[in-house]
Length: 276
Image (cartoon, rainbow, N blue to C red):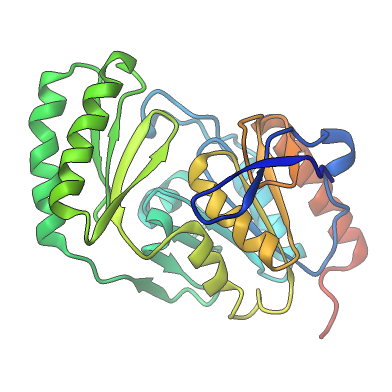
């Protein structure tokens, strides 16, 4: 794996500033993995609008194969809501976390939802609505527990978008913070990240005691990378964004699908997860 590192994150962890080599850095499949997968930019290509993503026809079956091969130790970890994930994939039997961990479904199907300040979130949303009306091409995406301001189709509005979100943090910064993504600024309650939700899953069966593998593409996935690195697991970035905490890299969504299919085939040939 790549060892050249420089720079520091806000949490004090150094970050990779050179992309790991695809051919040598992907781990060999093991039946003791716990697999955590981001959605947008990882399992599906980023689209101009969140509801315009295209799910490859073979993807749900591939996820089900991995789920069977790893005795259920597969979880989707996304900024989307759980209902949105299920609508897109049709895989309600797979554990998942939505809205950066503010809601999740464990391996037994139990749903756990965080308590948040909905009054403050409503105020944030109302404040952003006139901004979107005044900036054609921007889009507001209320998710129930977070709200995302997209400017992918209006890149010239980025500076104004950052300014209004910064002003909202002056009022609501005690309970909320801004999660940046690819041409999106998402206002979300503090305390829950993709890293914290990975840690939660790893305390529960069938994830507990396994080697965690987190695969993601965006800045929002860095907390997940850090969490699995701390646990001696493997963090895999889709794409070439730098700097990153990821220790391995795969070039594209298509390449990831091919690699995951090989993982599923290899694990099926190994007979699944060994008895502990």
